[in-house]
Image (cartoon, rainbow, N blue to C red):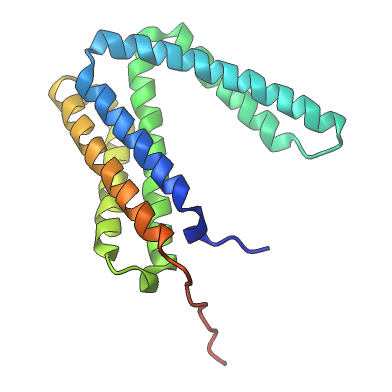
Length: 187
């Protein structure tokens, strides 16, 4: 069973919406409000971890594979607890997690570009979007402490722009009907 990347255009659109919401969050709220939201985010992450534990237990009872779900549950619960227990460091951890998310999305965009570059006319838009997303992600991971005040607002603006670009690209991707298979050359 083969899954075509361009058939899952909505995943990129959903990530675009998340980027826009993140940008609006950074632009519209003070640091104190964002810190409170981050703590509630920690509670939500913790609850997701608990739900993953329940899913793992259900899979174990049905003799299905559950190792990855258990590992994800432990990691999710640990992240949720860290955010709740260390609220002073929560914003930095939150920015680092958003940075990891942005790096992953940037890499996914590059993979999509490499795989379907013949099927899209505006491939430069995706290239710029993926490189800026990677840059933003790396900056958030490597130097989260510098992102206060002005830089947080700048990230909000960039996040809004990237979200719009991701949604634009997802609709381009939605229009892709067929991507020709690469033929292997005889040796």
